[in-house]
Amino acid sequence: MSENKPNCLLIILLAFTLFNYACAQNAGQAYLKEQKLVEQSTVLLNNDNYLIPLKNIGNLKIASIHLSNPYASGFDSLLNKYARVRSVSIAAYAGKPISNLTADLKSYNTIIVQANEADLNNAQLVKFITDNQHVRNVVVAYFGRGQALDKLNEVTAPILYAERTTAVAAGFSAQAIFGGIALTRKLTGTVTQRYRFGMGFLTEKTRLEYSVPEAAGINSGNLQDIDKIAKEAMLAHATPGCVVLVAKDGKVIFNKAYGYRTYSADVADQITDIFDVASMTKISATTIAAMQLKDEGKLNVDSTLSYYLPITRNTNKSDIQLRELLLHQAGLIPDIPTFEKITPADHSTDSSALYPVKVNNGYYLRKDYFKDIMFPAILNSPLRTRGQYVYSDLSMILMQQVIEAVTNTPINQYVQQQFYNRLNMQTAGFLPLSRFSPGQIVPSEDDEVYRHAELVGYVNDPTAALMGGVAGHAGLFASANDIAILYQMLLNKGSYGGDQYFKPETVDLFTSKQTRISRRGLGFDRWDPITDHHYPSELASPDSYGHTGYTGTCVWVDPKYNLVYVFLSNRTYPKVSSKLGSLNIRPRIQDVIYKAIAKGL
View 1 (cartoon, rainbow, N blue to C red):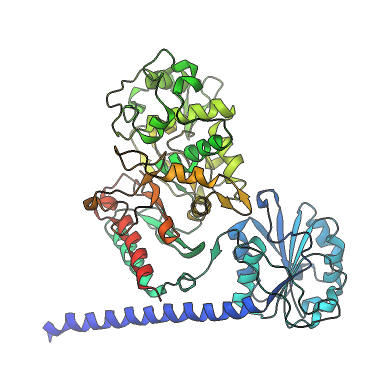
View 2: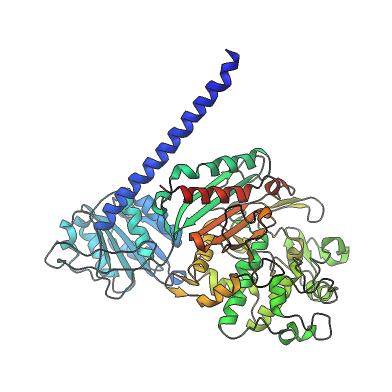
């Protein structure tokens, strides 16, 4: 009997796996079937001013109000994938004048009203819509058979009319408002005297959609090995937790959090968590800034460092081309000494005019430490390997100085204004504690040697830390969804949300292989042609580009498969672990995705 126990257990586990596989696949297919019905019966009316899909959402302050929509929470949850949206229940205003609601929302310039048949029998709600449509953006998401449309005869604001009243219909409408889903139908019959056969406005998809794997031709069950590999990482203490996101064909089809923020298992990771993305900063901030400046004719990658930074003219860095910096072929050493060079006079436990640079709680660096100590150390550092590929953080620190000289703006402010705000990346940016509570940020390390503190919201990289948390090579924090937005824009050849951020040829230039010396693009890491390296993964195509981060992160874009893969973790907590790499966690998860694509439905 004892010999049969392992076989019995194996059979049970296999049955359980197959059951879950079948359930996932069936659920995905059911979702697709319902979405097709929703798509065929959802029409956009009154969009004469082309308000839908919403544009420039970084400048919008949005509220979503509902009365009795049973799917309001799901609707609002999807709205919040695109923008920070306040959810308001009109039920809280029962017995009060509707003018109270208008007054409470006076600071909002965009109002989305969810309404079903019963809701539109409420004359106060209709009055709220008609009163507000003249002074702010109003969008009505109406779910029902159409009989109540005649209650909206005085409404000139866009009406997103969904004939089906289901959870899928709610999600479809929420995403269509932001351009996550295209609207392709017109009225197939006359519903009321005003809304007649053939009426309706068509829209294009401009942003990410949030769907199921089946929507991208993938069986949900074929992605379940991601769970196994992620859990293997947790059990092996390769990282306390992680978040995985997969976007295929412009659709986020997988986004899950695993494990905990720390090994104490007090707080579970969530998909909205903000991570220190470490060297992903190099392409997610510095490189994209360089790309934009090139497009504007303000930056030439074949010009020398001294052209932009006169301070380098009497140094061995004078004739280095920006192209060499971006390719890590300038001969620079990997980094300069950091905390081990700090003297007691260089830092203080209290902030003051003499010690203004906050490194973390209770640690303030003296004024101009970067200018007086760190930058001269970079300028005076040797060039030992010029013309060879040697990965160096100093390359991107020097690129940061160039960008700040050209724009006359600190790089953190520049990328926030030019990219993160415009793309409405809600969490992305440097110095996250200026905008978010520590409870929203995953800790990256317990530094017992130099900073004597747990690092939560303070950059893990020591050089970036001594630069005040803003550096060209590290310092960016973001959630997985925000990273996906940025790299979907690059996959779209610079287009997202109706805006063009780069010329397509600029994206192609920076992300393509440049020389025979290395696999690199300009700033971007790329697929490695050495087969045995299996980098970034065994099945990635030669078109792949992206970057990894020391804290245990990566993003990879594969244009051949129309794919964005994001992995965020804190393998450096409490101390750095090499197991994430030795177990090949990130590439193995990436290969699961490729295998699922190959298997199809």
